[in-house]
Length: 211
Image (cartoon, rainbow, N blue to C red; front, top):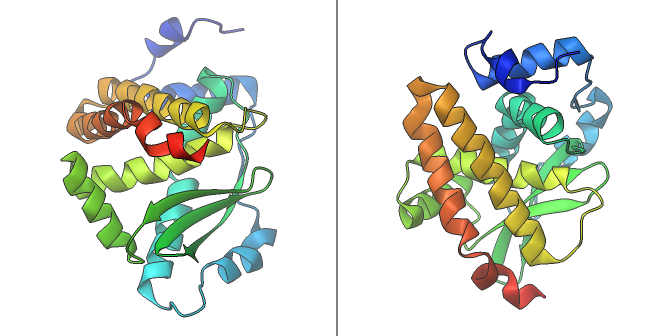
């Protein structure tokens, strides 16, 4: 049995390959989007009074991430960190008072949300990208990674600050590791790590009022 990730890592070129190899060695099953949930997720890709691209863009980006790059993130959470990752089954936008919430739905842990004053997914990404001084693509990846990280918090305390701090630490660890093992995408993952690092220092300010 392979127990030393460093020794295993010397045989491959990047973290993605390490995770693929570990999966083949241990036969680990990953949470896969269940075709039976298609009708449910399609229904979730809508909002009364809002139609067209804003909802569809978020839905498509979220599902595309979950079925591609998000799989490597899920492997990292499960294999390297030993987290129990809950399957993402849908995505939608919900309006509460003056805010809009881009939501992911999971099989067991409920919804996780990105709050924005805009219902336009791309405009929301652009707003946060300017706020944290990173590229649009890195900000979108961060937002999707952040919300998917919540799906690994099964059984964790419901206390908001602890959960959000945990998520930022997960994103920071993964993006830092990916930056090191994927030099061709070093800046991309450095930007994501930068956002997580800044957000980690802002957790109490953003979520303290929810206690």
